[in-house]
Length: 157
Image 1: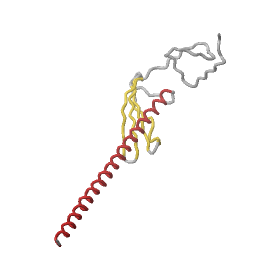
Image 2 (image 1 turned 90 degrees about the vertical axis):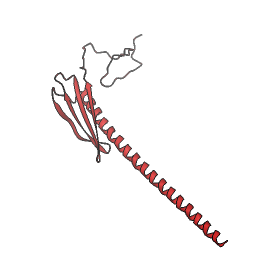
Image 3 (image 1 turned 180 degrees about the vertical axis):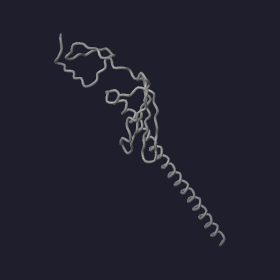
Image 4 (image 1 turned 30 degrees about the vertical axis):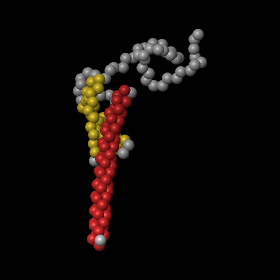
């Protein structure tokens, strides 16, 4: 009988050892997953910053605040602060300026991400006609640059 008490103690210690190993493995797994998730989030953030730089250039071109030069490669923006990082954008074009190549680089700490895009530019066509106080139409080919105000009191019936 006295030997049975030692066997029970060894069995309990073995179970404690197995549980400790399982808890340590679980801890390392959770810690590893948390780090991977943080890295993935940081990479996604840097990509979003680069995307914001590209869209910023598109907006500047659209509203005539930035005009690409023919057959050139220009640094449009350099280290513009955005969120917790910054972006730099360069733009090159062909002789006719109907195509631009945009390179946008987002930075956040030590991480960087680059987006390269080729975009076609269509010319703005201005058609002169007498001013209209307001018009509502079902046509889908109307482009409005700026604000439009529709007032239900202005109508002809």
